[in-house]
Length: 336
Image 1 (cartoon, rainbow, N blue to C red):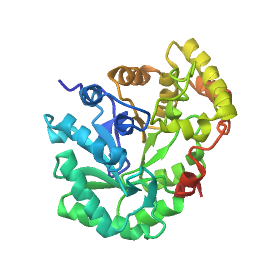
Image 2 (cartoon, rainbow, N blue to C red):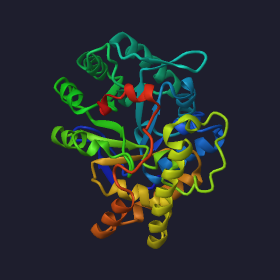
Image 3 (cartoon, helix red, strand yellow):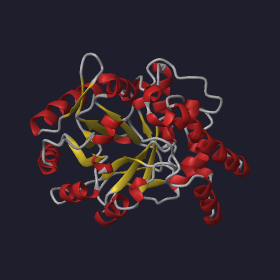
Image 4 (cartoon, rainbow, N blue to C red):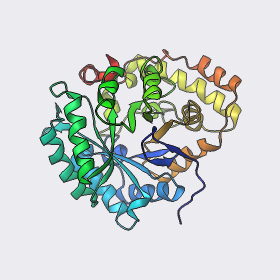
């Protein structure tokens, strides 16, 4: 039975209403090493039963695997119980190498056709380009998705990792429900300009990376190496001296969490939740245990003094290393 007790948030001024936290599916399709499919499906069910509603995926996660997985998980659930957020445009070669991004109108219509089939649905709730395609005006991309809304295949338009100017240009064409972007204690770049513009334009935030890919949790303590396929093995913040420095930040946060009587992850998620009701954290759990731990953050309330203490212990510019490798950073319109 679905739990309707979870608090809700509306994504922006025009988007759907979702649970206070959402579930991200990427980790269920190999990005952090092998995942158990039956446990992944059970985790999707647990999230829906908890009242989250928001399930986020990308057509390139596991090259279609994630959409097929989520489609199986949702097959016996009422369609209206789920808000499906789908990213498109990531191009991957047969060798697994990135080929860039494609958000041409003809391409995105093709991508959506495949996504609908893999997910087993006749519409998606939020459709968004995974990154800004430098060869295609954002107006063309947003306009094409707007046509899909008119045709009934999409409900809302979202964006991902774009900057303030792009937000304004996109919103001038069609209302934007939300911006999906990394936001955590150690990734706070949106606060200077992007977040204020989102609030000005009535655009919600779905925040991914709230645990900084495990750094802001207890899972990395006593780190003994990454499993095969775990992309963190090459991520700058998880290399050598960078990792050592970042784990010191995590240890400091763990000490504050212990004083608060919660886990490190719960404290990190609670901090993001406290930044505003217009910010919905996406939790990348792939097991019911991790999902249940993350839900515990909803019961952690922070005073102004505690927030100040947390931010003093983990300053905004304290992280060692960039969020992604140089090539991927160059593709982020949000970082320009």
